[in-house]
Image (cartoon, rainbow, N blue to C red; front, side):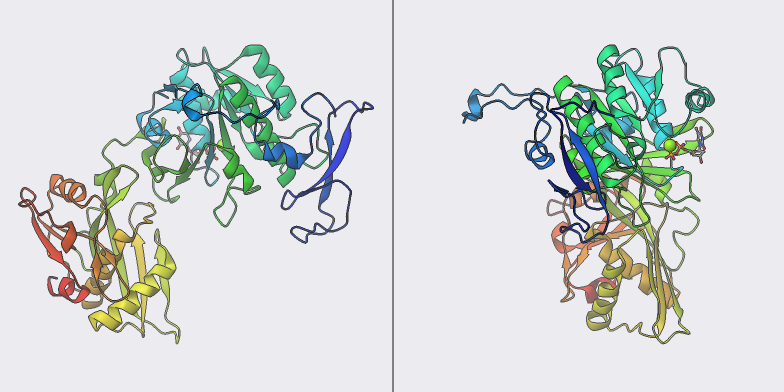
Length: 464
Ligand code: TYD
Ligand code: MG
């Protein structure tokens, strides 16, 4: 606990939403939660005697200089110093390597491989960039055991079993690592708060302290974050705003493939994907991921359509599967895995209205193979083609890919980087593509591939 000196003040922070108040009150006026306020001590050290709100407003800056308007051309620019993590797919998601002083939040379901990836990164950067692995969930023995199981050389790897942020930063100041891995942020707590570790206020304050340290010293920080049932990172929403990058691990438990996706990145493209396979020696990079998202066996079967998605900066072949079956329910089911559910309902309405296909008495299931999530609208056309193929129990023509957005009036709209997508499909041996007219190459064709440009949904349906 902070020394109760004469110069400490207190404030009250809501554990549910993080709002703060100068006086205790029974109900948080911001979120309406009862009995959720806990006390926070503010040390009266110079620069620290600020309210929680003021420290949030000023961001991470520890010292408050007198503000001055400066022409941007006179400002000394921060050169981004990037260091490779030694793991190519991880570098790709980070935007080309780890940036000095960057704070990266990594979320994902339990057991998906967060600790494994970070242990591997710790080892592959040893010698180049010294780091420490701060563990709040596992003992040092477990961390060492995992590293040994992964076949990593243990010398040069530093770990610390500690959950108090002040003590972690004390150790960091003494040993000056260039990056810190905090596994996980939910276990950390700061002495200035009386709330329990894991509560919203603790998570927020602990993260804020690490962010401030990162920016002041240029130390990079990886925060491991737990994920709630709803799929968000447990803790306050502000956590995602405080950090420079938010990466999520995706992948279904049955598959050994793991996808790391950038949801926010101040230093790179969002939605950038890194693909890994989990094996008995940890996570292995998959440099050519297109091949793994095609199920192999089922392409060419009724209900399957291959699409080219472009997540981040790389085109990717993905298989969309649909199953349409007579429903016993008065309210037939619409189930999606790896796609947005509401979008499917909308697409089926367009299919009825502009394609003349009624599915009101049918259950419709749509799945993206390989546990990957497709968020772009380029999936619209492939989803409808797969649905239609399943309904008619007739496979699509062989070696065919499709992509395109479907509008509410039945028009097929182009998607960005059409040519690049077509080339990726051609590289993998596809011979036909059904795409929006504007995506069909104007200058000649794609080598070895027949590109069918369509403007309306009805036209696309004629070609299958
Ligand atoms: P872990 O990195 O501990 O997950 P997280 O930190 O995200 O909770 O991963 C644990 C899972 O990975 C566990 O189910 C076992 C599996 N695993 C392997 O298959 N191979 C390995 O080499 C390792 C270390 C773990
Ligand atoms: Mg873990």
